[in-house]
Length: 372
Image (cartoon, rainbow, N blue to C red; front, side):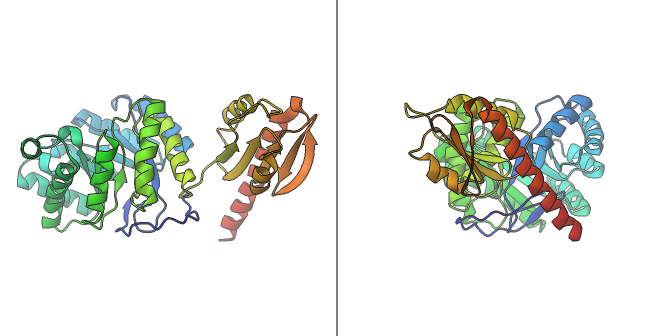
């Protein structure tokens, strides 16, 4: 369930749209999404991947629909999952019309590459009839040829001009329920493009650094680029583009939002980098805890600090904290000293306390929901 979190960041005002049951824009929490990389014709494999993304916390999932056979497969996929689905469509307007009939939650198209005016109008009318929003997606690597000639190379200004062309088409038919992305693999170019368009339109913005790279380099580029924009209040939904398991995109996305206090999901670990003062293996402990606790979705802060220099201060600010000592280590809960624990049982004790707290929080939340 999406939940607004307290953050000092003032969000850019935007028109709210709905992708299925998920609100995007306005005062809605920033939605985290990914895209399947399975063959859409492989219904079973695609459904399995989408369910994995749902478990990781994905709010929205995009699926490529390149042809009519894929559209029919999409219908089976739609019926098998709960998360809102976006159909990624290029060139053939008939595919867009078909998935609109089959229950898609959003169309990712560029009106400019659909073709003749009547085809564009048909897609817009279908979106209106079925209450489906549209995502306009501009990519620096596939700008129109005349814009490439005009600017000589991909630029932020060229991307914005491309987006405004597509937006003009939607405006001509009085279609307002759309969102826009302007993606580039160059971080600065993408950031500048989003800043430029943020002042030109009222619609929500879908943020991403496209083709960012592998897990580590892609996460860094995305964190830098999206971090700058999100800190300025720009952005309503994000996709982290990684050459990695799509589940990692969701994890990185939430980590970025958690770092800015824009969303929380799962455990926020505060851990020291370790040094010669450490009284237990901090790195090994963290690796083990992260591996064991990936399934915990409850929001909480957990501090893992190896010595008594910074340990008590960090542990007191966390829900649960551990400070390295000699011969035993000290556990804190809710800012107070709780008990001493042995090195041999450190990870087991922390895992047990975290899971018990998560279970209590879940029960409290369920009770609140039950009361209405």
